Amino acid sequence: MHPMAYVGISLLVLLFLVFIGFYLYWRKIVVVCQNCGHTYKPKFLKFMFCPHMFENIYMTCPDCGKRCSQKVENENC
View 1 (cartoon, rainbow, N blue to C red):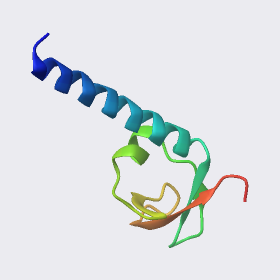
View 2: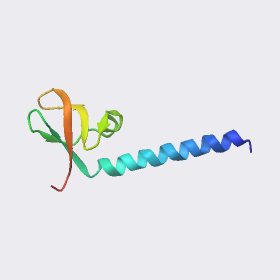
View 3: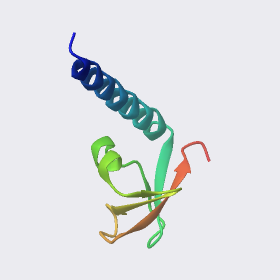
View 4: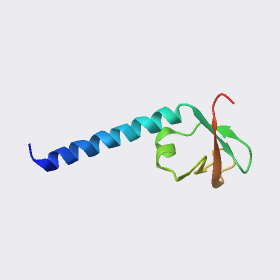
């Protein structure tokens, strides 16, 4: 097998593991809008591709429509 095939397979495995990690994290969280206080669960793909910064994400709130930094919290809290 060509050495570049190993690199390609390794990248695919890495991307798959990142996807699984995001999914497992997404299942346990809710997002709280900093503007209006609305708590919601974002769609997975929107959550995965929005900018993340520690415990905050930059998304549009479905309630007030403002795009701002929003706090990620544990769903059980």
